[in-house]
Image (cartoon, rainbow, N blue to C red; front, side, top):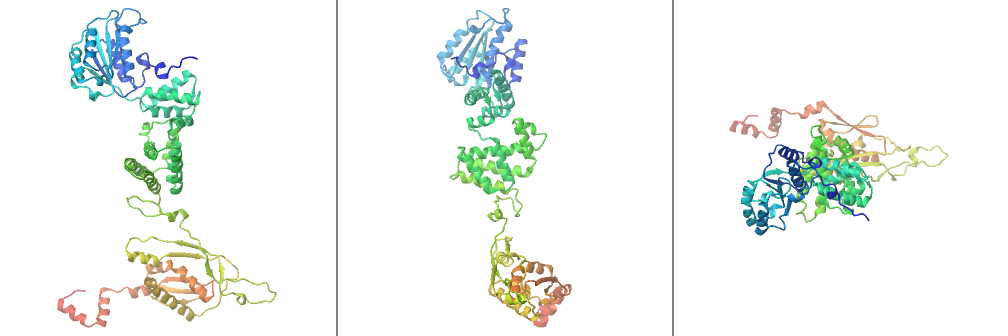
Length: 563
């Protein structure tokens, strides 16, 4: 069985050209070697796995290659000394090192000392190292490497030339993984390599370790599904689906989808933070200027561009704020699942136009999920013709009360304020629309004007007994008139007409039942003459009041009042 070498060791760069994502530093070091302008103490600092030790080894090797008259293939390993400061951090270790520095190299021109994790040295060790670092022998070069520069004392920092290594970009890491996959004969999807590069979070060593792990899991064919399953990463398709449901205002479906994600073992915190990042990527995809900030694969980029066209910028900004707020509150919340569900309901309600909303958090009312429609049967007279050979009139076969199922729609308008007065008024003016099924033979008895007036008055009395005084006062404003099987009712203004139109349906039902005529209708008109009659000027109002109380004239003169 052949011994397996991990990719991080097998593909460690052997020259500066192979180093990924650190072009500025490698170019500087190469030029410094060529121009003989290299400092005797260098500090390589940056995150783990970005190439600090690798660059130190390449630099140590190339220093002697350029300065030696021997062949490039000559081994200068005896001129390179590596010290792990994590385990050799005492004063004695540093004294031993300074003793070795005095001895010149046997081969080559320089002796290079690489001290890894230098921040682990004790304060005494740092102080013991100061003099040697400040005035080293001409043949000695020190390369210090650390992930935590802030832990190094300032006197050491001031004696070093500092190189800050950056995190490796997602695209750079992906391209390097693609190159390795090609050399290993592995067929890898672009999105799969992109997910590995994102998971590595800027560390090339971590990316190679994850790559080896996923290859062990899926074999020679690397798919996006296999990578997400092995790394326990939420696939971006889940976020695309969630956003589609949010844009469609489907609260129940969004909650069910979130439950399915939890059932796969993902945490709510992972989901909501990923959703916030998804909204950020959609916002980035909205503009051609910022599209380069979208660090995703080519296939994913197309999906982001398509979905971003369906999202408004205002919606995305509000969505990012809600998701980020939920992310911040998640750890301190006692009911974390409810917190995420509330955030999802608020997100789903952002684009809903069913009701006027303010800037406060808003959730769609449950009434809108069945389109505000409630079906109920009502009792109305119905004509059921009998099978009879005799020519009888339809009215002879009319049972007084039979059950049919008309279409009933109730659309309740919410009060504009929370005052009891407004709530009661809205209850009175509740909109009820009734439409009867077309059934042949519905009765249409003749009726008189007096009967209509009697039923009208009786209906007003019934409204007053139920406390619906506003509707009763509107119906008292005039008297009904009958013209060609139609009841006409005049009102002084359009506002009163609109209010009566809202409660017209139950009134019409009442009249049809009691008149036994289902073709009768109510026509509500606005009479301009009646309107003028009610439109009093202040002087006219004063004259009317003075007729009722003559003391008003004395009051006006006593206090010298104006109208």
